[in-house]
Image (tube, rainbow, N blue to C red; front, side):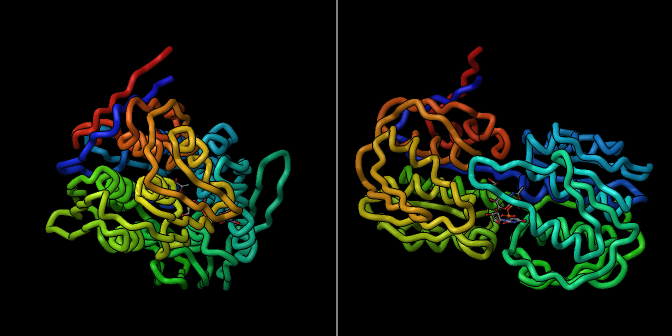
Length: 423
Ligand code: EPU
């Protein structure tokens, strides 16, 4: 099991950091590559992450050719032969995001069997909105033995109102609707930049998707889709993680190619705290002086609200800013587990249902800690940068799902951090 070891306390991050393509964009983009019956699809700027390898295997399991050229960060998918229609438990249990293959397989084959994803450490994460939407488009859904079977010789357009703007449900339904008969309208759709990126690829494939990035998507079904070439959007959460790291260490970091618009909710909270965030020609510069920062209140919401995927990292910053900060988590019901670990490092905090009160500014000390999910692992590493002494972060499988060369990038910026393998 690998561990990350950090000698913290004196670090001031300084320099430039390069951001990868977004994990949460490339996973649904890979699901979309199932749709075209003609031509190859080429995805560029693909991050080298374990979740991407898992999704490649899900797509390969359907009998589709997937080649990942890691040197060029490029994936080529050829789905022109007939495809199978089963996504097995082996992969879905590893990564719940693989549920987004349900819509594309069904739309292409008229039949799909995908294992039901279980709960996860950050919440129960049901998929009722995915299934209700597909049913509205004419699919017959059955659940048996842990599998979901969806059948519809031809999906038809529908008017769908989503109770909550679920990212995954919006993606699943948007992909299914591209090959449905007639027009599908999805109201209260998710508006994340990753939704926009998926709509761009689908349109490059010949689909007719309008309104991506707004709360109403209108998709006019077409007879068939073809392969396309596409650059994956930059990872706003990786960029945001480095912004917070710079602020926590009183640093001065240029986050190259980060997109201001995608990080607006985070940037506005950093500025409210007193962090300097400026747009430069080739990225976003973050500078801070910890002693001058003020506590804030943050509430996570679907985009364009503050992203839940930045909540853990931001609480690490709140922990070292003098005064009382408040974090309200409204998207997932169990996403404060990192605070329990951070308490082992001297954090003073209280959790009441969806609200964490952080009494910031107490001295933190390094300690052995365990990451509980992907973003928690990043938050613990950032806390290790500012805690006095040695922090050892374990369970790095979570980190490897979503951050490419995280410790190398921090080391390049001046952190005293290394990764060790232990039998
Ligand atoms: N929800 C339902 N029913 C559904 C679908 C969702 O009740 O049918 C609820 C969930 O239980 C949750 C909320 O809606 O409480 C949000 O879930 P959503 O479907 O929007 O999330 P997701 O598609 O499962 C994606 C990201 C997550 C990110 C969320 C929210 C990917 C692969 N994953 O998940 O990313 O937190 O959107 O922005 O895109 C991460 O990267 O660390 C991560 C967890």
